[in-house]
Structures are given as structure tokens and as C-alpha cells.
Length: 393
Image (cartoon, rainbow, N blue to C red; front, side, top):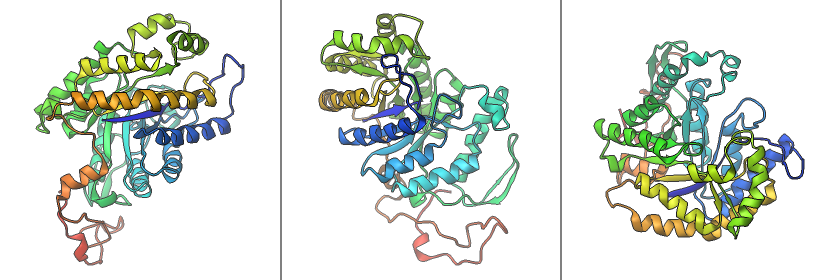
């Protein structure tokens, strides 16, 4: 089981101090939050992708490269890579490069994005969002697994004899999560490819997320990737912690009440009761998170949103200290004791390499006669002996 922190990269006015941080301050803060995530013993740090104010994370690969360079074991990932407005060729190139520079400490979550104005900025039409997401991922999947790709589709120009570079580290593509709040076609796509499915699980009651996850598990088994128990599931969550529950509600209330995403709606108490939001003591967070296991069974990744709604950096870092000291150790023990031996472990680059090669050495791709050069779809280079290990077709 992996635990981590994710950020949506919002720049929001602090309703208590009245201060709105600058972009520079928020970017610096997120690097410090990522460092703290590793320091407190968590496993994953994730950042979203947005191209509109009030968000700053328009280039998650650049930011995650900085995080990877300043950490030693933290898995860096996206909490959304926009599979619609990004060209899948660029996704293949950029995330393969990040996989190399992070030494395999990378995976990514792909999603459609639901901000309508962003689509025309990149020459796209939101009315094509779903078919574009399906087609673009199909191409990305092939680009990471086929040395030479011939491809013709609806939403981008054709490819002929194309080789994406760099090739994935060890010739093993990064693990992909498909993120969705409400779309069964995305759950079906995750199941079809045997990838992970990530339910945002922030704004909706557990019953809503459970429908999609159960559907994904059934289709994962249907497509022959394993049993329902072996499907790979991730969940979002959000929390505000204090030693005493009443202090947590008092401190977080002004941020909740003014938050653009859920302020001016249900009360904090009502929202906390009806959704996965946890406001309270460390023990209350432990108890509520365990209800996710009660509902969903074994799952592989739990990410928490901790830095939203204008919370100042000092407060976020204090929250993370509480999380790391009192919540995560207890959750690790509980989840470990509850785990069904037949359920899947969280995928890592190392586990994917073992699954592909067994005890054989991994293959490090290099130019050779079986790899295109994007000019002639061939190459005069000779196959090197070290490039002859087994590989996927």
C-alpha cells in the first residue's frame, strides 16, 4: 500500500491573513511540501496539470523533475496528465525522459480535464473529449511498447515509421493510472489495458466512487488481467488535522467557507459527514480512512490533498508532520493486517521489470536494425548483444 500527497496547484487567497501568494511563492512551497512528504515517510508525491489561473502547474514534468532531483525514494507522479489537450507523442517523450532522470521513480495518471476553455487554447474541442482521450491513450500505449509505429487516427496527423525517444527505462513503460470522477468509459479503458484506475474520491460520497471501482474490477477480470482482487485501485482524499477535533474545525472553517471548489455550499460538518473529507484528530482520520477499506476492499494507493484553499505553507507542513507521525504508521499497520494475500501489491518500476524479465538482465534500448530512425523507419546500426534480452511485442 502506498500513501502520498497530491496538489491541484491552486493559488488561493488566505481568508485569515488576506494574503494571496505569488506564483513564485506557491512553486517554492510545493517543492518544500514534496520534500516534507518524503521526510515524513510517505511514498508518493503527485501534482496536477492546469493551464488556467488560478493554478500554476502548467508543466508538471519540469516540476516533478526538480522533485525527483532533490529526493531519494519518493515516487513522483501526476494527479492528472491531460490526455486530451496534450499530444500523445509529447507525453511519450517527456514522461519517458522523466522516468530516466528519476531512475524509475515515476508513474502518471491520465485524465480528460474538465475545464472547457482550455480545449480551444490547444486547438481542441471539448465535445470530442471522451473519444479523444480513448484514441490518444491508445497511441501513447503503442508508442511506449512498439519500436516503430505506423498510426492513423481521427485527432492528430498520421505517423509513419515513428520511434518515440527516449525509449522507456529498461524497455518498461511507466505505470499508468486512469483517473475519473464519473466516466465508465475511462474505467473500461483502464481495465482493457490492465492499468490502474484512480477514483478522485473527494467531492462525492463513497457510494458514487464504489460504482466505478466495482465496474473497473469486473472489466479488469473480464479482459484477462487477473481476478477482481488483483485490479489496481487508487483513491484520493483530503484532510485537515489538529490534536483536538474542535480545534481542527475551528481552524479549517474559514478556509472551507471561502474555498472556490466547495465554499458557500453545505456546511463544513455536513460536507465532512457526506464525503471523504476528514476534519478532526489524527485518530479520526485513521478511523475514516479505514472506512475506505471497508467499502472498497484492498487498494494500492491513497493520496491526500493537504495544501488547498489558501492554507499557508507553515500550516501545511505542520499538517504533514501530524500525518507522518500519528496517522500513516497506524494506517500502514492496519492495511497490512487486513490485506488479502491474493490482492495486488502497488506497482513499482522494479516490480514491472521483474514481471517482464524475471531473473534475466533488463534491456536498455539503443539504436539498432529493429528500431526506426524517424527518417527511413530503419537504421544501419547493428543489434548489440546486450539489446537481445526478451521484450514485449
